[in-house]
Structure formats: structure tokens, C-alpha cells
Length: 250
Image (cartoon, rainbow, N blue to C red; front, side, top):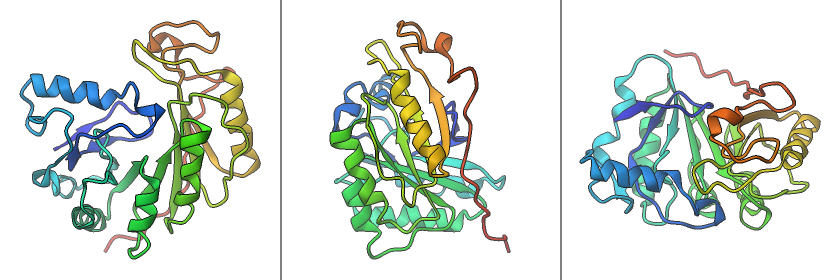
């Protein structure tokens, strides 16, 4: 099952794995955990185990049923490189990505070391964008060096939720940076100067910059519903995306 997404930087989500476990401060108020428990209570297939990691092979071939070229976020409800997901199962996911060459697949992980280990002996399909989450210096920035070891056509960072000023960081070999604040009733604030620092570095390195949202705190430092805080930074919407020409379809 794939579903239409409200995430601003993708079109649909595809979850061949559900459930996860916390590894860093970004996970503290995980939206996927809350959603998984809600889906479990509703009796939604695939969420019988709540937020326990669960392989869902019955969903593997869903993108192949869709002929219209689509951008898929892989595992919005999990992490493909979780320690309990066997490499043999990841192989199956990558096989579907290769076969679904009309689509673009965005894979995002917090398990950057396992990501790099996996691709040491495997190639990244040309229609797969590979990214890591960056929320702070200690956990997030440390993941970037592992992403840079992966030979992907598009490498990206999801800097969400941005929990502190991450300072100067290495953008070599990266193509896209997404930045966003945390949402939800317990959201932690994000300061405009933290966002500006990232935007300026992206501009200096010719890296596409995408501002996703302020989240639960506005640019003015006031807490309110995220819909009232919007997505504008300095009066404009930043929707830059990396340019990629996919191979000609047979």
C-alpha cells in the first residue's frame, strides 16, 4: 500500500517496513510512533504490532502497480536501515526500486553507518535519492560523513527537527538540504538564525535548499498551531530541489 503524502517534498509514501525504535534526540516525539498506535487502534492492516518493527513483504510491489512517474518517500513510518531489517530484505526493496525506473524513490535514515556498510558492496539505483537525518551536532552532523561514502546520484539531508545551531558542516558531494521545525503539542522551538546559517552555506556550495515548515513555533518565537506559522522564510517560500535527469525509459 502506498498513499498520497502531505509531506511537502514528496508525492507518495511507500512503507514496506513499519515500526522503529529511538536512536537520538530527534526521535523523542516521533510522529510515526503516534500515527502507528492510532492506526493499530483503528485496525489498519500492517499495524497490528503498533510501533514494533514489522516487515511487510505484501507491500513490496505496490509501486510497480503505478505507471505514472511518481516521487516516493520510502518508509515514512520506519527506517529501512534499522538493525532488525535484514540486508536480504533491503535487497528486495532495492530490486523493486530498480524495476520501478519510472519513479523516484527517496530513502532517508538515521542509521547512517549501516547505510554506508550496506552500499559498500551494492550499487545505488539511479532513481534512488539517499539521505540522512540531521537534528543536532552530536548525532546528526556525525551522520553526514557516512552519507558522503555512498555513491548515489542525489544525496540529501533532512534537517528536521532542527534542534540547535549545527554550525559549519561539510556539504561536499551533497545535492539537497531540507530544513524544518518540529510540530506537535510538545514541539521544541527552532530559531531563525539556525535556519539562516544552513541556507547561507547551501547557497555558497550550490546545494538546493528547501524550507519545509516552522512547525509548532513561529519565526517570532511564539508557540501556535503549525498551520499558522507557515513555511515562509524572510517573506518567501524556499522550494529548491536538485536537478536530475533520469535514464530514458525503454
